[in-house]
Image 1 (cartoon, helix red, strand yellow):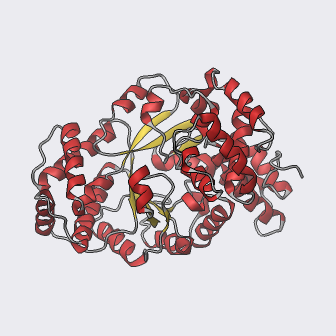
Image 2 (cartoon, rainbow, N blue to C red):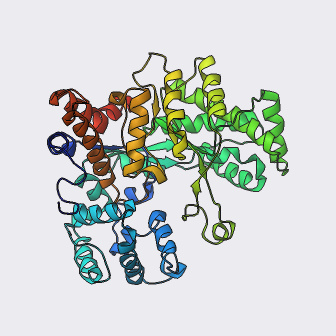
Length: 467
């Protein structure tokens, strides 16, 4: 079998039928990513392959560093061609890393290039790809349209003004680009200087003065309303683990006042304040019919020297070993006890938590919405073949795969949409092989319905994004 041919990852006749006849043609709803609203609003174009392919991609940066490549050729001042050459020299060493699959899927699907990237092919691939970047299909809008992306959920701070989203909404772009409410900086009571800076921005965008905790809550509610008016229907939180220490209104006010005075609060006080805000955010989402996403388990900015020089999201995060269960139960139960539990998607970064989170979704379903609490797709270090299979297995063993809202890119790159294809091939292979072994019914139409649902229809209906 040829590498990355049409039947890549499809190891049975039914698997191939499911992918080629059903999954392949499904549109994309990319409900969680980190694409730049500014780049979409401006319909950005890219000058060369390095700019669109390597800029901001910390997956590749980590591999380059692991291959002994100097930082100058990764995030430094080297030319785009030199940076591309460094990647071309690294790719042959990535065998069995998912980046080898992604790299060549992207070359094939975007540029029609079937060559394996290596020092020997670097010149040809550079020239052929760069020639195509000036074509209409290679603008930000063109790439979204090429892959039939019906909706993109960007990740936005409440202090962001949303002007880019308003511009996109009137641009005529066929893809809906909607903001996701991610208020993580509201928790920075242990870093008063950063909190003060963020509060200044929030005051400006909310057009409200923030002195007391009640002012902060009012400003956040106003921005939640503004996001809703702009089409937003999701929130998101990036947490090591859920906070678990209960907090009264009075205690939360005292903690906020202490931080506003310039005094860093204790770890326990931060956890109390974070729990208080997380309950508040859950109430906002439930009242509006939104979906809350919890991304749990990342150990961020581990390399303090590199973080100081390169900043966050530069490839120095890793899988954390936080104990997730008790804290998450307390949070979900606090909302459920108030009849304020919104639709929710739970993502884990540590594979040891797969069955913990998958089973927990079943303890908080309430019959009001099919699949109300979701075990989210394999995330970050887990969004590769092995991790996707394990997530699907844990979900299937403890809940309803048929109600799963499917894949997302979680990417900053406009060249990442083949990850949906990658997921779909793995899904079809799982179902098709089991059907051909007699472990699932020999009912192609039933299997095809499941594939359509997981690839597109469930996300469309669950998030309310329409056709």
